[in-house]
Image (cartoon, rainbow, N blue to C red; front, side):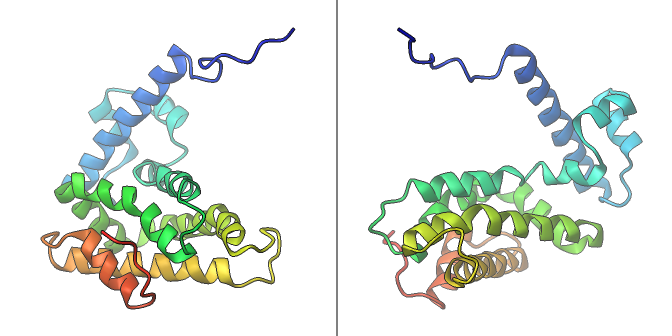
Length: 208
């Protein structure tokens, strides 16, 4: 009789954990350099010097300098999808999406000053515009099937505009909220700004 796989079977090993820790450490140092010196002014050699690694080691962790910056937000899409999948099925898709965005908003709230500066840097640096567009594409590709399921439609049906329309609206609200947050120098609560933006489109905001 074949036993069920143990809980630890798919957990990363010590080597992989060490690799992730090193990658996170290099990214953290690089982001500090971007904030202190500017993204364009910071070179890969600067990052290597700060982290005490060689260029070859850097490229084992990141294909490019842009990917270092992307590491700060690349997990947001996956986290949003998991949060959305965990919402009750009786919620409207719009309310479920707002609830699912809570952890992302909370991440900004816990790192308000640094997150504010990074968000401002991303929006004022032309070289990072492509990264933002790629993130948007990932949002659509990952989240649309779950929203289609909530609408009761076929996730593989590209003729249904509702999932993409909902994602575009929610991301637009998030962009507007972050822009207002930046304009206010991070003094306003991002969650409330997002609520105001989403209320302007749909009245079924989740109860706070």
